[in-house]
Image (cartoon, rainbow, N blue to C red; front, top):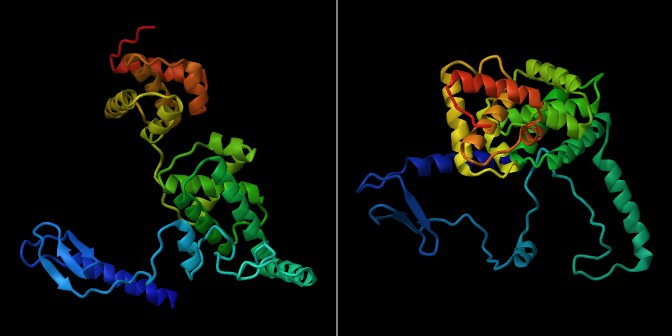
Length: 317
């Protein structure tokens, strides 16, 4: 039923995207549900009347009313081992009307809650999945990763379980590798140093698991570039937008002269950011930049001297 519903919604979106205004040919159309009309934004022509509103038949004016009136649960998510489709018995000892449950019935409710928790995890695979997804959620929260990265990481881990790539490996090592792959796939780069610090695991083990999973699952991941880290480093160093623009300009010139090949992206990003901060009058020390970028001060010195020499940049120390 769900697949059929998704297919119908997809067909409706395709039809809406192909509809054009018969008068001006514009595809920018607006649905006015208060008048049940399909209106062209450009010329104002009413293209269709009596359109169907697929939303709920009730109205809510605040979040409390919306929670009371809604008749559906939370959307399906891959970050839970049962995808959020199983029933959960709440911990509050109250019935559907909000009344307190009598003391004589609470023991029965406690037993129901205990057996419901046990039946959610039926075998070893589900237990492994529950532990791994909980670890993924904890790591993602520590790294302040968005929801799409968490969903992508959960999907990759489920694929690894189906391919039997988890056997003989620690859950923490595989989840860390999966999270690193999801960050790269969603263009939200995080360095191995950051993930290693959060998981308290060696970079070598995370990298070995990452290479194995990406090879076996045939993940098409592009290498990270220094530009991917600039906005985050600037934000953590409290630098202005001018410094960010100048840093990207320096990296673009370095790329044109092939100075970025064979160098670590974080080191190049840190060195370019240090040069830009000096040129824009918002100097940050090499130690501050090194701590944010997760590289050594020696790396920054070597890179910025090379960039300054090859790009003819005068840095006043």
